[in-house]
Image (cartoon, rainbow, N blue to C red):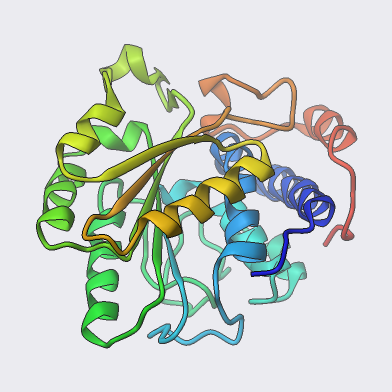
Length: 282
């Protein structure tokens, strides 16, 4: 694999963050906090790590697949898909509008390129990703399946059913990641329902677990590359990705308030002043 161009990747991340805040502001609805926090993850996947084809086929044969379980952070995924060629960037202006393909949570009924399953009902994405990973094994396809979950989402029971299933069935072409920002819609995760030692829990279920900083592109790429090296050894891999909600916009950072609140006009202006326009706004 070619060496990453970190300067270009950082420029792409800055533009995608601009897209996120503009999309959520325009419809006064959506989830900017987690989207901003996970920008480096999506940039790393789509612009360096994954083998994927913007021409898009639902079966994804011979490609790496990405599933978003915490579908409320759709703005970052839509912006990433547009910026990597799945559909025109101008379509980002339709986010959450009537008859738009860019629904608040990813959906498949309008056949938006890049989306293989409707998501946002928390707890389901890992199960879907496991099924896709097993299908690849059955088809002799050696590519990886990636899935992103939220840390608050770990409070869902279905996550732990899937967590038991994957190691038992040696689903070792699966690389799962948890956005570990410590925030959920009602407050800090530790106050709502503590996850205690999440690393020890996943390891006890039979997963290979590693941790990395999700807001530094160099660390995200190194972490995902290591995950690929750890895969294929009989166990699935889990990344605990430490991020900060609202990363890149100072007044949003670290607060659960921005889980699902749109910036007003003044707040948008302040946010855009902190995020250089690098690829051109839609």
